[in-house]
Amino acid sequence: MDFPVYIQTAMRILKEHGAEGYAVGGCVRDTLLGRPVNDYDLAVNVPPQKTERCFAGYKVIETGLKHGTVTVVIDKHNVEITSFRIDGGYTDARRPDSVAFTPSLEQDLCRRDFTVNAMACGQNGDIIDLFGGKDDLQNRLIRCVGDPDARFKEDALRILRALRFAAALDFTIEEKTAAALRANAAALTKISAERKFAELKKLLAGVSAAPILTQYKDVICVCIPQLADLPEAEYTAAAHTAGNLRDALLSFAALMRPLGPQTAEEVCRALKTDNRFRNTAVFLIEEQHTVYATKGQARRALGAFGADRCRLLLRFRQALGMEADALNDVIADPGNLPAKIADLRVTGADIAALGFTGKEIADELNRLLIRAAEGDLPNEKDPLLQAAVNDIKI
Figure 1 (tube, rainbow, N blue to C red):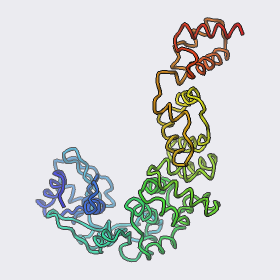
Figure 2 (figure 1 turned 60 degrees about the horizontal axis):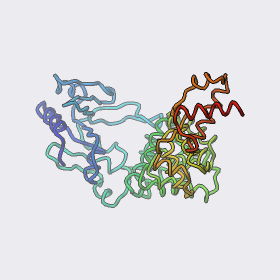
Figure 3 (figure 1 turned 60 degrees about the vertical axis):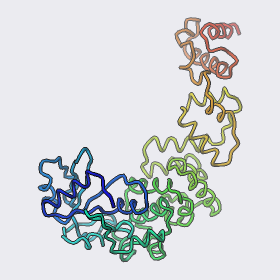
Figure 4 (figure 1 turned 180 degrees about the vertical axis):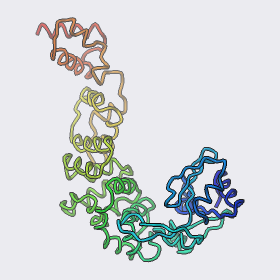
């Protein structure tokens, strides 16, 4: 396993101070899978205070000192270095009540969630695999380290992580692991909404989201109870559509579509999604059946909703098998015709100068926009003003 220069530097400095640093977790897994590695996490056989002393002269951030993690800035890269540790008991189904530091790599790795995440690699590049992670990668399996029931009782978020990894990597969840996650699914109610939503988003964007959503409906419904009321066939159809979109936002909207926009908004608020995600998902569900019969209507939609939302709406409608209409044409070639009042070559002041007052000004601008967007009226100041004068005569 080859490391970038800044990771080699971190390992070398640790070695020079009598410590051993290992790359662990996702970076090892993704390297073996031939996937790009975005983050390298290091584990080290000394307490965090010793780690800090090793990097005297470097910027060190005490990221999570009580859990043994410090972040060192090397060549403008943040490197998280966590001391080998043994977790104490879990009483909140999420985090250990206490941690104890250990010099043993094996003790550190055996507390991790899944075998494919419990491999390490030292400075020499050799992979340390104590729990069959390589074989599980080869067999495309998500399997817990040790007793799966114990792993999920320690941290219920691992239940969603198992589904997320299976969806993202196109893996199958090993039989005993699958049974244990189902048996412990109710504990997900103890996990914060933000944490659940973060995992669900990654799951929904996965290449194999459809089978995971379908096979593990009972687990998904613990996080989104409103889905439990859907008939099986309706849920399965929504899950298949959602799972094939490869986009968290579009997939979420497709899954929520049978519930309607109001319930979708309630779900978003319960999961504490960000405002943009919530508003866009609700917009997609509300606008899915709107027909844009003319290019003028489509251009006004473009002006009202923005190009990004309209493109998402097109993708959403295409995934639902809906026929193309004028919105498809306008998105492909918006042209120079106005899409919103601000695009008109006249202003409210121009219209007011003709004698329009109050709400009449906005109404007249909208009338002009409709005609100009349809191409019936040139978007030039003199023709627009003459049209407004004619509207006064009417």
